[in-house]
Amino acid sequence: MTIYISSISPKVINQIDISNLPAGYYIAKIDNENSSIQVKLVKK
Image 1 (cartoon, rainbow, N blue to C red):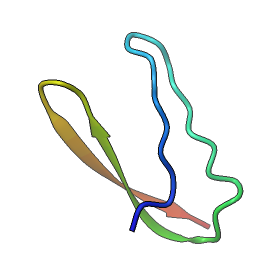
Image 2 (image 1 turned 90 degrees about the vertical axis):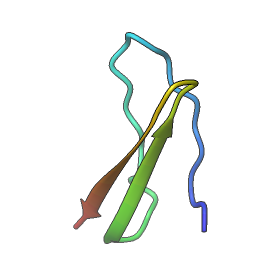
Image 3 (image 1 turned 30 degrees about the vertical axis):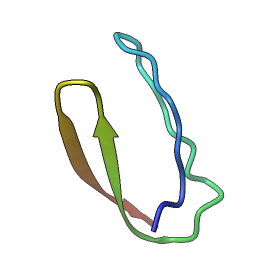
């Protein structure tokens, strides 16, 4: 299930605002043309 989608800019520090999400465990998936990475997030 997708909860949040956002575009980010390359070569810039990007922040994702998850303050409106409830506490829990999340997985952030970041894709570009060449690769994909998944990062585990814990919101307390």
